[in-house]
Amino acid sequence: DTGVSQDPRHKITKRGQNVTFRCDPISEHNRLYWYRQTLGQGPEFLTYFQNEAQLEKSRLLSDRFSAERPKGSFSTLEIQRTEQGDSAMYLCASSLGGSVWDNEQFFGPGTRLTVL
Amino acid sequence: LAKTTQPISMDSYEGQEVNITCSHNNIATNDYITWYQQFPSQGPRFIIQGYKTKVTNEVASLFIPADRKSSTLSLPRVSLSDTAVYYCLVGDRDYGGATNKLIFGTGTLLAVQP
Image 1 (cartoon, rainbow over the protein chains, first blue to last red):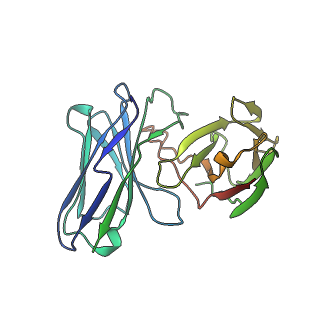
Image 2 (tube, chains in turn yellow, brown):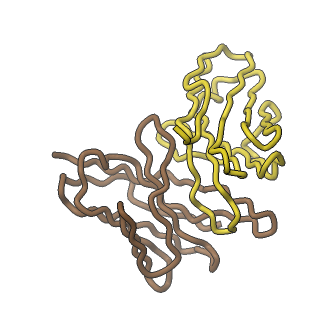
């Protein structure tokens, strides 16, 4: 399967713990996005990478959240001191870029986080 | 930033054509209109994108009137497997940095019955 993969698919943690999620984009895609989705809502943008550079962060992304994309390949999203409000599906997407009009993003299956 | 409005839910039967309309009164001149589909516990999937008039691919058609203040996604002959949430998006774009984050609304839940 050459699509976007995410690991783990499910994560249950206790409040106050740190968690880290991994995303492997489609290999030739230089753009990578993280979104968060809660029940009944559409995905909300969190952050965006072009190659290894993090070019935009949403105001939703508090200081407890950090994302990296070393060497422009896979990406990690870490949440420190988790809170119950962090419970959501975390989605990763990648796109080929190369055009300002590139709206075709390929999403992974997501990581469902439950904070107890 | 253009905001989109679409019905919360729609019902249909297998074999029927389904049309989901989205309004986007404040669409910018350079914005494209994009539709995504999402099944439960999966990430969204790109369906179709257009700028004006009509676009057709193997799964859907997209109709956009001249004023571009609305668009209609048409799904021909739906089946049970088309039951999903459908999102209409008008992208938020940073022209300088080419950031291309997608702005999702709550979407339209399409329920196809036998």
